[in-house]
Image (tube, rainbow, N blue to C red; front, side):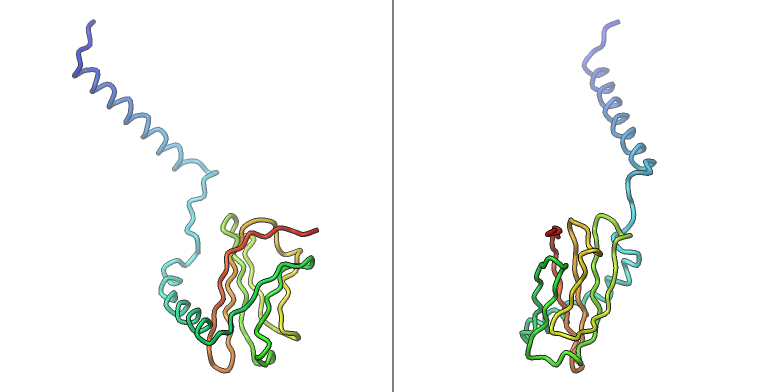
Length: 152
């Protein structure tokens, strides 16, 4: 039996489409692939994004940016020294993009001008840090993406 060009092209298209459909079905049925949204309430979080932009711009404009240092005891968030630490309230959120079960929040309660995030709470790898804090009625935000390595 002789196959002409038209038949060969049709067979090639059918083979290619079958190949692509096989992988689409296989990946959508695979339980190893994580198809979750990055955050649980994505659309609600998106509505609050403008507040984050305003708080971050507020921190830059008032020059009250935090500093992040890595020590042998963990991560150290250093607040500006000219602020009264007893009036600072807020939360620190640590987000692990690779595993949502490692995410955690810490309240900001200061006895010194810094907050120490203990080394035993952090695994090596990528972390996104967000610090929402309030001082004298003004809201501020510090965001940073880091790759943490245990110094021990």
